[in-house]
Image 1 (spheres, rainbow, N blue to C red):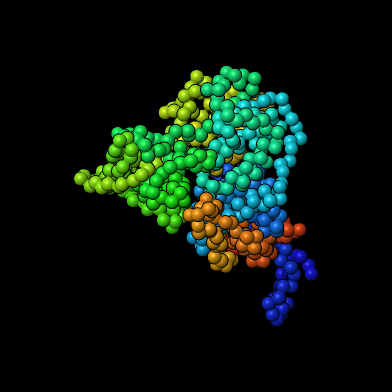
Image 2 (spheres, rainbow, N blue to C red):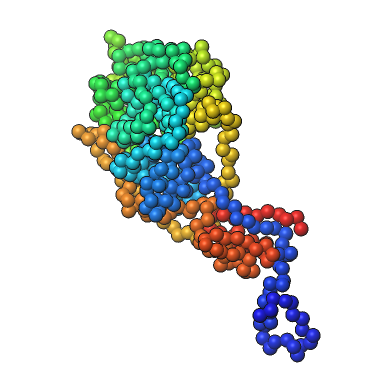
Length: 557
């Protein structure tokens, strides 16, 4: 068949039915176009929502094919703690998930936990760096920020020493999070894998007391990631009475196996994650627990799942209430005087300010008052080296401080935040430190285009209910501190993986190729191209792409 244009001189030469006398390659319909579709892989919203920048879509695709080791190694590129974060992260990735409004977000933390546990069970090890450097780096603080920074520097081949004030590494992961949320064997396994990169560890070494920053002069750079060490006080009379204890102090004693006497009635003050951990731990010690929070549930900073689980377990939460007096007898706590609150205008945090209700008081008899109303920094020992602001170290998002050799990250910079934020800041600082030691120019990764919800065509996806996390029921008895959330089975994980849209990433579904009315889309070995000689710009390919992998630009015609 000719590909030349054919002209009929009269009706006698025309065929009896509508058929092509030649093919249509002579008719370059692309000249009709004023908009142009193009293939444009984008970042999935879950990835954009992850503070650590984990390639969630990528490891989910690998896990779908049961390539679990590859999947977990992909996570390790951004986060050395998948088993930990799969348990304790506040999972902003799920808030960003495109499936959220369709039938519920993909259960990303359960998948991450499964992969982290797989790595532990299979005893997977890190690949040792191929290149080694002589520049030694000191890490002050062995919590999530310090361990993350040490990990990424060690993977780059730098000799790293961690100075930790306590007897074991882990920081808040070990001393601040109860074992029913984060089993110690899980934490120990992930820390061991990190240390096995050749990291030198000096525990029971408090920088600022046992040694000074000046004693670390042999190191080429320092990273400070000591977290927040002190609990915020209530500022009430009799706060030093027997029976009044800081929430962090209570958790550290309990997690260290030290005896703690709290009695049968416990009042916890606060609405954050520490308050929920304190309350649920006290409940497991046999106490009747009441939490006082001065705002409503909608304003609670604690992870919603933790609040829900605390209530389900039997913790009573009294909203719009705050302690205003501590009543003692012979130096021992007897009663808490409380005042009812109401919400006013928003404060600097964006939450509505609690205002006392005049004359609205009540009393709670209690054996213990555990204060978890926030944490404070303890960075005075570093003020001769770096600038402080309200007790926090002043540093940019990559950890650069006022001292050219000193970097910092985590809660000691940001104030109270989350484990995954600390991990992210540790990694960012490691990248900056490595670049500056080598005399390079630090160029942070540029943000990619993120898929918009309007770009995803949900008509191509079936409704599928999200997996439910199985839970243990016991909060009393010998196993009262056993892990509550038990994890998904391999089969349940595989079903959950199928729910992922793979937003912004082409999976070769062929929709664009099938639906193009001009056969302008070519497919060869799984790669699609557009023949713009014939693409009219109808944008059917864009509309029918389930995952938002195509974009549109104007051609100004």
